[in-house]
Image (tube, rainbow, N blue to C red; front, side, top):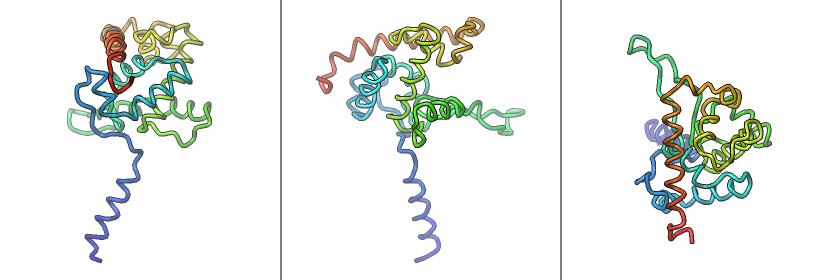
Length: 196
């Protein structure tokens, strides 16, 4: 076997060992039924989290839309010095839920899920359920309140408690959009034929 062929096989094998997260977004992200018909495993993950943690499917979907546009291996953009020299990513956020390294490690320890991966929809949604329940317990935010859950998700529990988002009008605007998208998905879900 030639060295080139051997190298190609190794590259393909290593690439196939990834976390399995989808690298492309579903089509028509404004249509909950379309998303779930393209990715049936998403609905199963969302329903499992709704049963386990009480976070409604539409709240999870709106949050994932905002965080990663349903792309499993999503990362934050690079930072550049003088516009050309890459200096690393803006944060360690990764995957469907864009969980930061430290928060993800806290979740894996708390839930005894050492093998959980941010680019697997089941793990990412379970993380969101865990985190949003902490937001409810620490800050009294309802699990159905997508807007305020998103603010706490973005700012952290302490930041939310201190209303740090009030110094970020752009974030308040984004959180309102998450709330609107959540309501849009909520209205669409009962009409999804595949879910009946």
